[in-house]
Image (cartoon, rainbow over all chains, first blue to last red; front, side):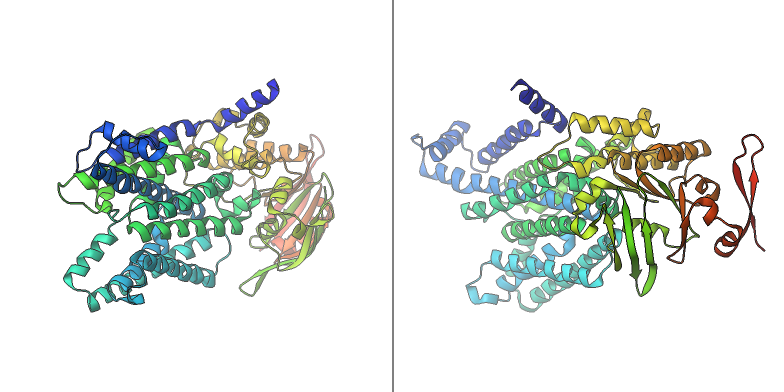
Length: 353
Length: 254
């Protein structure tokens, strides 16, 4: 009995970073901040009363408008923002690790370009005659683009290892160019100025339309993505010296690549279809976390998921309050805040080397 | 533990890189793989390590064909030290060696004290224990090579495959790596360029243009005729007056 307890303690020590104890409170704090901060000032005690009413069936007397703003608008939005951030950061991390390419990010595979084309086809060209929502169109476009890119990469061949990694990056670039051109073509042909502006806004990322329906899609997708990454922590590490080295360490390279890259593509497509393409998170969060917690995936995976979630919840809060009476596209905030922050981390990391 | 290759072949782009290699490793021996540049030594080692699938023929380990083993099972039994493998990641020496435990770990079997001890032992075997916290990019080529070997040892393999492991090493470390490999109780196959080092192996396999020319004791394989035909050098054996050991003196054939 005592031995088992000791074994547990040992196991725990080798995790080296009891991340769950840090992640949960931080995530909770971010979500509460997301629920409390907004253009309409609502006192903190009202916020907690609303949360208590909704979560624990408490019976505080709260105004219906306040309750609606906090629960239907802010809480759902903060949860989706957190899911997006975590999923995009992990998608970037997985692609960087498996393709051995520091510049890999979820949009590299043509996913966001395809999503834009899908969204434009529905919103501007009227595809589906109103029966198809913008999100569904975007998801279809994203999925189509990824399938095309993957098929091209497969047809172009290359064995395992670096060569194949290079091929999929090139295929992704070709796919992105094609779908961006299609988007521009549809806009130029059919859109009026108002629509063009709306599409432009969507492409930079926008959480305004998010409601609880989206939460039930975002949360399972993110949980699945996080679980897949945690399950393959050792495999991700094994790619440190390339795919051949991973194979020699007993990793079924092809299976891991298909599973994790497929998962990254799927979660990205889900996120993009809900909130548009939010750049920067997938590329920069994993790199920032490498400077802070190191390059080993047992720490990097949870740290990136947490940082991505908190970063996007924070960016969403900023996008709502920075210009009174107007919501900025969240992509603008992630780049404006993220780029200088990342530059700072780069400079500090240099000193440590 | 015996590794057997039967009519092994691998081709790419219509070109046969390895063809018709039949080879049976004897348990515990050190088998040297020699041959000129581009003769297919590295590819043969990759096939034997199970990271390339052969186009023809088959490989078996203790009578079980590779096709019946999972990649993980192969990784628990065979380790490969590649000729060139590098990373841009900021990992430490110890991190790099810990990767060798990968085939023994899973999400449900995390890193344990036992794994920790294996890693420490592997670092000591290659004389790198004082470098454990150094970062990979601060190491010299020879130090990196020793870390790669430590990672392979951390896999606790029964068969160790090494692709020109002495390439970047100074002469002291060349000799200590070779004597380490020779002293290990496991089977090893080692691709070598230095024919005098090859003389120290139990057996040698000579490869030319992807084909296995002959296998046997160093004297049987490294005859003056073969040296001339395969390597285009003239070789003569001298003996060291102090202990009588053989030295191969090589001259270019003009």
